[in-house]
Image 1 (cartoon, protein in one colour):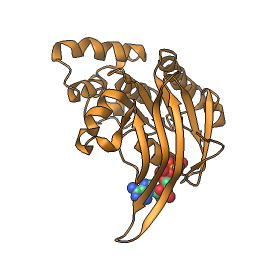
Image 2 (tube, helix red, strand yellow):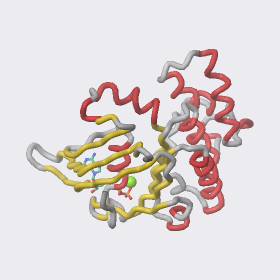
Image 3 (tube, protein in one colour):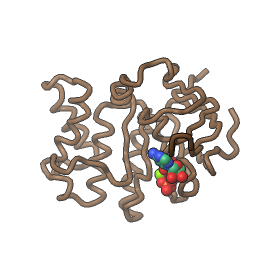
Image 4 (cartoon, protein in one colour):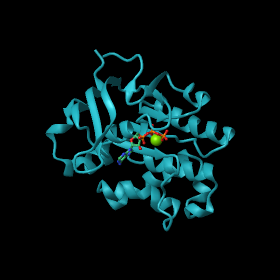
Length: 228
Ligand SMILES: Nc1ncnc2c1ncn2[C@@H]1O[C@H](COP(=O)(O)OP(=O)(O)OP(=O)(O)O)[C@@H](O)[C@H]1O
Ligand SMILES: [Mg+2]
């Protein structure tokens, strides 16, 4: 039997607004995602897509329910170890690229390796390979503001891939790009998925969702038609 890499069981998330006020945004979400899956999440603005990605990506944690990442119950591991675990297992891609503006493409891509304490002598080849894999070798020493949107997103993909994560989470990765550039970005993400990376994307665009093997709709914090 294939073991799920991500297992969510009755996950709730409520944001605390005031001393006693809570805003429930994820409601009893149960979902199992197998290694190598490619899933698109769609749903109205405010339905909880990014909140769910943040939980899966260990940027935030559920208020109730069980989350197992690679068979490990994340409520049993200290939150201070999340960044390390995240750095090892998960690559993130955002709509607005989130590159560090003062650093070159090369340095942006190198950062996850520095965080994960990759020895210096191994970093260079990995960075150059990741940059090459997204076709950005000629721009390696450009700063983010010297890149087009598509180039910036390719740099962000190189940064997400450089640690060879098991899972890539891409929240509206093509949201700021034209159709052609968006499809080029999807080609790159799809090829990472073809090599075995589990890929979760959030998108408003049905044509982008078509790249995935499965689309899950989220409405008002609940997954439609998903029962584990
Ligand atoms: N840190 C926070 N504190 C309080 N409320 C939040 C916080 N983050 C998000 N919310 C609220 O939670 C709800 C879900 O937000 P979320 O960002 O997950 O939606 P989304 O589906 O990603 O929307 P969009 O498509 O616009 O990106 C929204 O009502 C939002 O206002
Ligand atoms: Mg969002």
